[in-house]
Amino acid sequence: MDDLPQLQTLSEEERFAIRVVSQVFPFRINRYVADELIDWNRIPDDPIYQLTVPQRGMLRPENFDRIADMLRRDAPQEELRAFIAGIRSDLNPHPAGQVSLNVPLLGTERLEGVQHKYRETVLFFPQSGQTCHAYCTFCFRWPQFLTDAEVRFSAPDSGQLVRYLEQHPEVTDLLITGGDPMVMSTRALERYLDPILKADNIGLQTIRIGTKSLAYWPYRYTTDDDADDLMRLFERIVSSGFHLAIMAHFNHFQELEPPAVRKAIARIRSTGAAIRSQSPLVRHINDVTGVWREMWSTQVRLGVIPYYMFVERNTGASHYFRVPLARAWEIYRAAIMHVSGLCRTVRGPSMSAAPGKIEVQGVTEIKGEKVFVLRVIQGRNPEWVQRPFFAKYSEDAAWLNELEPAFGEKEFFFMPEMRARVAAAEARDAVLAREAELRDEESSFETA
Ligand SMILES: *Cc1c(COP(=O)(O)O)cnc(C)c1O
Ligand code: SF4
Image (cartoon, rainbow, N blue to C red; front, side, top):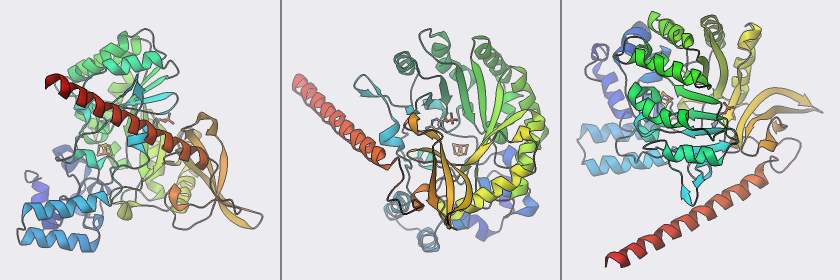
């Protein structure tokens, strides 16, 4: 942070506030974001400033003051660390059952670095792709960027993944994600991808790469030393018969303005890869209809296909970033209304919740009761997909767990099965833990 000239121009107080908040949340920014994306004449309101620089409001005032006080009086490290750990664990660091429910088994072992929630699509977290070029203040993966965090969900290579894909021919899509896999060198990426490209007993059709690099470091595709090699790799993926989809994370049309990103988009498309875009709707950053309208129409002009508008997850500093579902739907609808049909490929607002991706389809009144119409876009059980269901209207609910079923029903239709699945996953993890213990005991007998 200290080597960015723009941050030097902030007041002492502003710099101290950043220091306080970045005790709890990870902070990383780079020269491209500072020079090309942030309009420093508009801070603190500039959306990219809000997106990348920790904001005072991200901490509750009492927590802010406690940390500020500890820093001012140079409190012992242990005191600071314990207090910060307490705040973090109150912030729902692992939302939507990612740890217990999504990690699949290969034989009797948990397959680390892989998540399999929806039948067709497997997520893969390569170990060397678990950071990002800059960090988003609202990121739901924030705990993994902390220096003292154990990096969960990451795989050293793709050998076990290929074996898993061989055993699961129903998987058509592989989504390589992070962090940001595009922080990796082309050579590292190739090392993960080659075994997949060579495998012949798998049902894979699409390789997706989830990345924020087009917004944070477009030079990855243009002038980086191995940018040309990367283009050759993309071409090789396409000529191996896969659909290559770059799942680009864009939050604001400002990110699409610099010539470098436009050049990067053109280069990627020339390899035969498609670029789809997705973004959460976040207060202080893009909770304005015009931002979405302009972002989607610019994307279509550049050949990027709008794909998802997400609801900001209920983790981290969500009190600062949350947008109520009712408002999210209004923004989505007002934006969609004013763009061409080619932009209306985007679905949303969608919550990636424990049962699945749940879309707010609208607000209406049925027999005198005001309700949200919801539908399951993706379900942990494929049978749930496209099922409409209803929740009582609420002005400020911002996540599935803040909604109540409409029409006096006791619970949403997927709840009994979700409980059974959670119980089964817990039982499974208990058995695995016990087996691991027994193995440890055995090997300690052997060495004794
Ligand atoms: C969003 C998501 C996917 C991909 O879903 P699509 O609707 O196919 O884009 C896959 N796995 C998980 C865990 C997800 O959250
Ligand atoms: S780029 Fe993605 S993973 Fe990285 S900080 Fe931003 S939201 Fe999180």
